[in-house]
Image 1 (cartoon, rainbow, N blue to C red):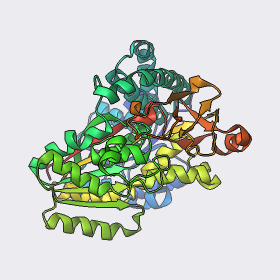
Image 2: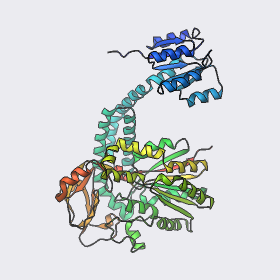
Image 3: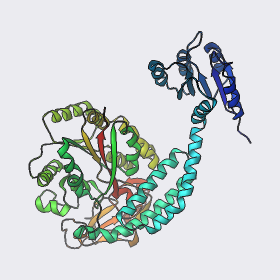
Image 4: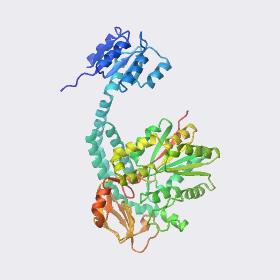
Length: 522
């Protein structure tokens, strides 16, 4: 059945002169009504709905902006295009402030008007159709790329493109095609896990063919930028690439953004990957240089209590002198104003590196696993992204970044690891001394019922972990598996299925963003 014609109301005191425009729109399938003043327009709008209002500014009686103000009160979501002779900045600014969908200056051609009408009324469906067509054309090549993927650059590139397709198709409402992307994600996770088991021990031994790792970020990204003045170094705990991509639009008006990807070290958990960022060292090197700091490496505890000291030591090694540092760990936005004040004070005192750690995203996924309310709020990747976007737009972090942009302060923004939505349990047999994390476990005589679901080693050097007790095993989950014990099988299956967890081996956990933010000229 054909769709009913879209209804347009054109309000202009020179409507007779515009008859060719009206006829042109009607030829293109639109139903157009025309009135010469604002009072008649409001009466029609109150009597029946219109899909779009074309509104002139200079009319006898109510001016166009006055009609717009009344219309916005009565129908906040009405679509309006201003078409006026006025080229005054004030008129345009006021119209934009009252949320017109477009603004045209007379004289206009029928094609110009049609173009604006099409953008407003048909833009979303046109974009949806175009995204679907683009994806259908690209899909065969994506399958080929998965078959051909070999090194870390191939995995990063394909994973990054799949994230973009997922976001584009989601925004276009193409839910049916999202299933196709998800199937390719699942295949990529499987290939990625098999590949990491082969190459990671090689990376740990001699770095041959390795990508940019957690241990490289400060030396390769932060230190080279010190020559241009102070650097703001921000680590957002547990931020996936898709979470970063949905907050990125909030930053592009203020910064020129260069996005890189780096690989989190294993396990993809804060005590290991974040300490590696701040120290530039692997866990075994940290334990060697600081005996007693991390007694009982099997338990996470407060293993990130020394980040500021580790960063000072790394900066001293890399630069060859003491580098002045201000470090803070931020757990709540409630003290945002005080935080901005402390950062401003640090800049005023000549600090060279301001390092800030924001824990909101990590707290979100952990709260989600323990709370039915949070589980419902972040029930899947899409809702997790929306929560991340909502938090970021109102966060102390964004306020700090706005301040940095205003003062010309360059920023390095990154994360320590991501997370994965876990859907499948895998049973592990362990003694009581095994660690409690569901994506990685250390313990004596650890064994998985299905070995293909985990990456297992008995050699801590393959993960650059400190030597453990005799008979210690190290097990990391692959794909979307989470570990359960046979004695608590049903409890863990029901409690943690569809939970966001981290510590294992997937692109979502390991391939994460590092962004270089350069303030735009003001």
